[in-house]
Image 1 (cartoon, rainbow, N blue to C red):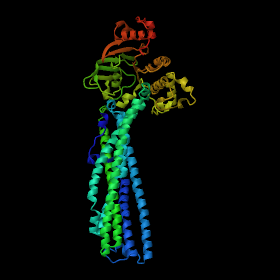
Image 2 (image 1 turned 30 degrees about the vertical axis):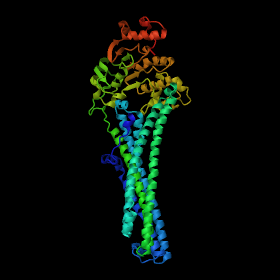
Image 3 (image 1 turned 120 degrees about the horizontal axis):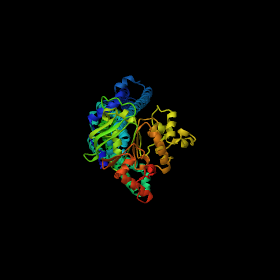
Image 4 (image 1 turned 135 degrees about the horizontal axis):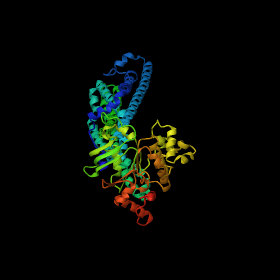
Length: 624
């Protein structure tokens, strides 16, 4: 279904889309003007050759007084044949050199404009993608978005750099050829152009066939991008479940679609170009027959016939080129429709026009009767209310799907609540500047996200204000200092994509250091210890006291061993806040938390757990 939605065939030319595209070209109008002027002049140099051949034949090789034998150029050329041939030869070479220079100027200028315009478009696309709410990415596959920023932008670049000014070049060439031919002989011109209706019919059929093939190619490319992104990112899962053969068969099917679509396009080209060649050759044959008879009757010159043959051959070349440009234009229109649809996707979560100043210092977090649903009224949270006092640690537990992570997503305004309010120091977070709100929070997720670069780059994560001293302080806080100092390059140790080369625990410790380095007032740990080994968990538990000191912290965990010292524990069940209190208070209630505790102990010890004494709280096992 996603692949069917990928391609929408619009108009071959859409004025509204073209105006928006030209908005990216407009800043570079001097270069476009230069390219257009070069194209017009280049078209003149392209039609001069046959005219010079006609002059040489009729004036110097086979002098004749037949109609059309002499042109306006004759008065400027020497009468002597040898000097005249030399002058025409020099003029011919001069036109070739000038044509080469003009063609270079046109090509270089438009390629330059295309690259700069697409740089601006990609920049706007990426900036917009960063501003879109998380809900947008829940509904749009990554592969499709990558296709927008790469393939679709490239089709527009092809139109700007190869087709935009080339339309003028080809059109001027056709117009000049027709004018010159009719100036020479209108009857011979009609014979030469008699095959144009047949070429027009063939071109229409060709364009429809290629349009459909290109549509299928773009669909297949989007499918390949999406498939590769999903399967390369999840290659470990593919291998552990022995799905290599299934994945290969699925990829082969998509790849076959891409190959077959291109094969159909190649087949259309293989028919179209020979068809044009055959018709143009037929036109040349008619010119030879009709023109030859007129030469024998001394009503036409040999030079005019030769020039007509050359003009006829050159006339059909721009027609073929315009057909290609039409396909490029149509592809660009389809690509631009998808790109501007993405750029027009509304940013539903944004800072208010006049944000309230951010509260200073360690803050108070309060949820007031919060209701939230991702879709419709399938409520994930139902009338949730709680308070995290400044400087305290709040823990959230519950079964999978209870709404734990949703609470942190709402607090960071990845989504907005449907009912109720979330307050930070008494201010509704919807009234705060979004950037200022999020930079007050440090977040560590279950799956550590590392970039290609050094350990320092990963901890700094683009924050140029962080000094090396601050980075080392964060490294020491999470007990990562010993590992870093043991590396030959220390903080400058290079990490590959996704932190390849580090253990899962080491990746998570780097994520902890990244969270602590800016010294934020709020800390969120979303099941941050669930993927680490016992030794690393002990390191994190030892560092946790230092991490939460002076901060309002929210810890989401399945392992109850990491949250027993929390000032307040919330127990969620099916989106409802069912229990809250300290570890010992919740155990005494014999409720959901008590059952979770007994379940954990039984899973690891093999027997039901008694309610522990206060002094034994730290010995509780994890849910794992």
